[in-house]
Image 1 (cartoon, one colour):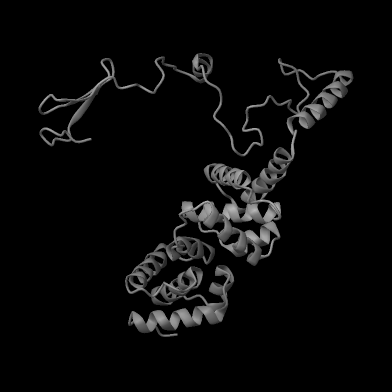
Image 2: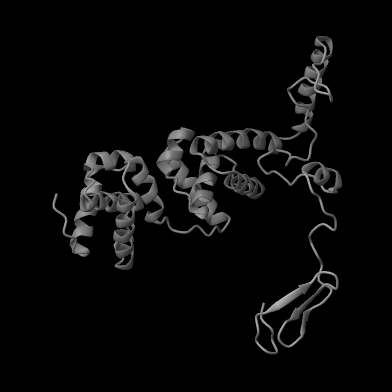
Length: 299
């Protein structure tokens, strides 16, 4: 925040008065500021749980967003003791009918199936909770727009995961998602383009640098090789050698060249297997980088 009177950036917030004041000239920049935090303090988890007056945050990964009471599977009472077998059968029936009652229409049924599949694919890809929640929210938007009609649930889920991974800069390729979801790559790509157009998503271009660390780790190369590969890629990006070419192929070629320059040579086949591209692609990208960047590489 900047003071409009003296231009100073030194401001102080008075929580008791609800004011933001410039320290240099004393001008009150804001008044009646609402304090969004709690007015109470807690010194342990028990106090925090007892004094809080709000519930858990919404979970888009849950079909009902976590707002419905659930009967767990543990068959234990409030004290932790086991429930009698006669009562367990009753709990089983309650649990079954409760689950049926929570899914009342086709949209909720679709969400229950789709979010389960989303969680499965995300688990295999090792995606974080924030990415799963973002993917679930994007899938819900697709349902609201009617983009799932006439399409496989698995293809829409895969396209949503791919789009969110691109937005968060997580290096996951169509080939990886296609192998786990067991959906053709072309189908995922077609659905991804439709979602991007209909929801006007701002999907950034895939940066080859996202794959450098991954390839270096898989090939068991040193940090020096990784640094050299990053330098080669930086030069290639500045000269515009990356545009119009597959990011994985360019990244793989940079890692291959760096391994040779540092003295930790890996064969083109080893790099191709890790990167999921062909040896021909690596050779072509290698020749382009070597010629354009004037690299002295002896193979």
